Length: 102
Image (cartoon, rainbow, N blue to C red):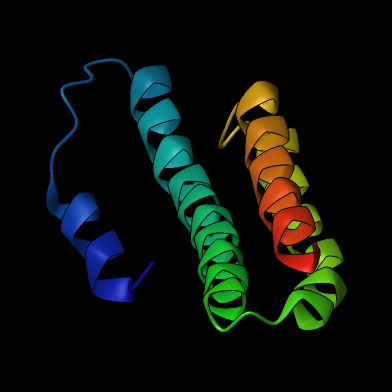
């Protein structure tokens, strides 16, 4: 996430009234930065492997598969996506690689 995005959210006044609710708002903004970063790395990995599969590079895709699994599993572990969603993504990509490999 870019710094100006964070500044935009910092300008927004939370609807919270109590100090604990305001603190929770600030914490949520900090967590959002990490969640957006994890989701972006996961999506980038998926795009990269999809690009490789479009070029019919099954060997290269198989080599890249652990990187994809790592990004997806990290996102699932931290709650950015659900565990079943992660499993489904990994399964579909692996299936595409198997079909391409023949």
